[in-house]
Image 1 (cartoon, rainbow, N blue to C red):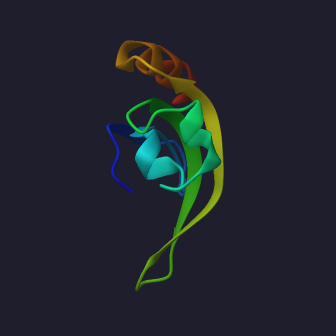
Image 2 (cartoon, rainbow, N blue to C red):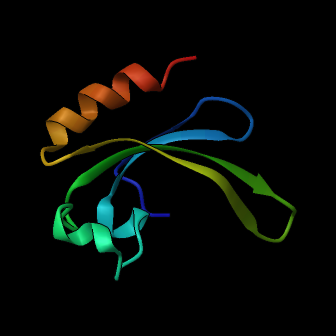
Length: 80
C-alpha cells in the first residue's frame, strides 16, 4: 500500500497516512462525500508468510482534507 507516512508500532501493526484512493475502492460509494485525494489516518496488521503480505484488520481512524490535520491525528496514534 502506498503511504505518505507510516510507522510500525508492533511486530505486525502499522499506523499510516494514505490517500483515500488507495484506502477505499475506486468505485466506492464514499467518493460522493470523500474525495480521492483526501488523507486517511489508518491502522492495519501486516502478516508475511515468506512469499506475500497479508493485510488484515483495516481500520479508518480519521478522514481529513488537509495533510496537516491528518499529521496531527497520526502523531497521537503512532505511539503505544
